[in-house]
Length: 563
Image (cartoon, rainbow, N blue to C red):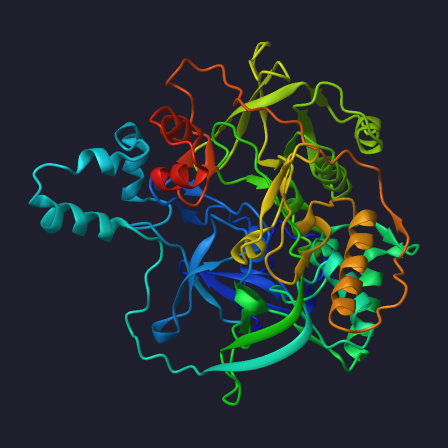
């Protein structure tokens, strides 16, 4: 980086993270130049520079910030590149930073800070769920000439490149394998070890730039008596030494068809500032697998409250990821809002990093665990049996409205009070990622104990393991994955041998979320602040209530009617 390059961001920690501090880089976002490090994502580099407003929402053009740290990001969708290299709708949480990267926010005019489309938020009462089915009916001749063109022009977020002369090269390749493992987190690595030891041909694919999954973001877990990252490094080294194991990173499995035919998209050079002529930009893999192990992990669920879409409101696990993986502080004054124990890990980590944790708001009336006790021992204010009613702020959260609630009904029972904070780390529990399982015509079943849908019946020769199977405790997930990998190798005709799993040392947690089926609010009926369920499509809790009231009961019908 030249001597005129910008200084590193004010929210960057002085040490830690998995970034390469010896290789600083500069990048551009909406015409401004910022600094980051090799190993950053665009999202982590923006947060390090104190940039939280990164886009506008689909329908209401509300200010949106970075919510997650991975492929499930709904808000931070940007355009990357210029000319015929421009690509829209790229998740900033997945875009790896390189020197000279140019990115631009989407769905705003004329600027991100001053967006004319934000007037839609003031007119929200005229855009209820399914409004276009009720509004654009008369006169009929206007549909083709007026209504449809206007709707189509307003649709979408990013814009495709005007120069359609794509100079990049793309490849496709075919491969047969005995065992295909999708997901390179702790469970995927364990399954690959188990299957690979049998001599079966194993392919391990993961969409991230390095293997390890969410374990790369955890600092209080030990495996075989050492930090989890040590086990990940050793396991990856062991797998790389196996001639029968193929590892693909930056590779997303996007299709699961009949007879175990799967399709993968590998980003070969998207992360490089200059793309070598002999390499394609992307490569499509067409895989025929004898058996498939799905280890895709889980999504952390958001909590539903007024203003939960504002910049500064993030998932609790994502906050840990930015601190531990990228050495970035997402805020200075934090409130933790949760219905389970996992978010307490975020509270403790923030405190260790020097962030003031002004309150932990827990919907549960009497939470009790080691983590809860540790938080209280640090004199953190833990408000049990409380809920966040509203996040107040214009372009960033600044104040939270909090009140005591009935933990069974969600009714507000106490006088609301206010707390100033620039960061809200929320956790509403966890949902197994069952997309590929469902695409392969597998069935899912509601688990009342875990409060989530889990894989049940399988249509293809496959198995879900770990958090993807609703097994959230790491120790149990590793055992489940080892058995799953051995089962797949055995079913493919190989001797998997004994299943060995490492010893796990992590705090005991209550992962089952406390569920409220009613959003706590003290506002008059019809005056509740917007509380978002689907961030990307601007679907609120009130939209879903209206759809159900109008007769839509199937979740697929509700989803289509409200978007």
